[in-house]
Length: 142
Image (tube, rainbow, N blue to C red; front, side, top):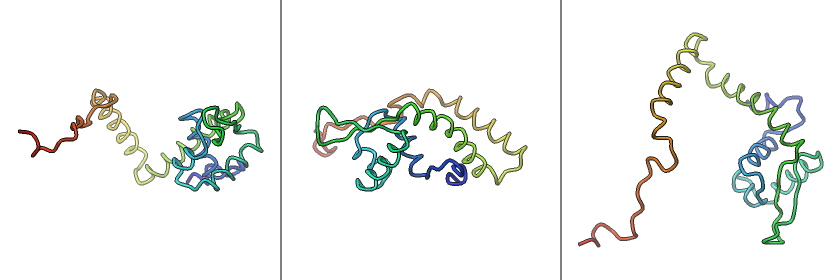
């Protein structure tokens, strides 16, 4: 699905995933990227080098830990990510909603919007989380 949407862009799905992840956290180290994408550090280094050669990302040494390389989007990388994001989203939507007829899709999306709006109060940060236990078991409390 993503590969089809990226056809003609000379960008792999994993390279796009890196660009998208860098948008969420504008400056992150290569180990952090590896963890987010679920790939090893060597593969991350290769991806970063490929994107850096195209002028889409830039590496810099972390001032706090000189062994770590921070990676950030360049303006060119950010523009590409912005341009591709709606294309990728539309591809996902087409695939997911393809089982519904056009009229059903419209009804489904309308209902989904109503459900989301009715439950916005529960979407605030921290809503629905359990309160932390002080580390004591219930049997310890007397």
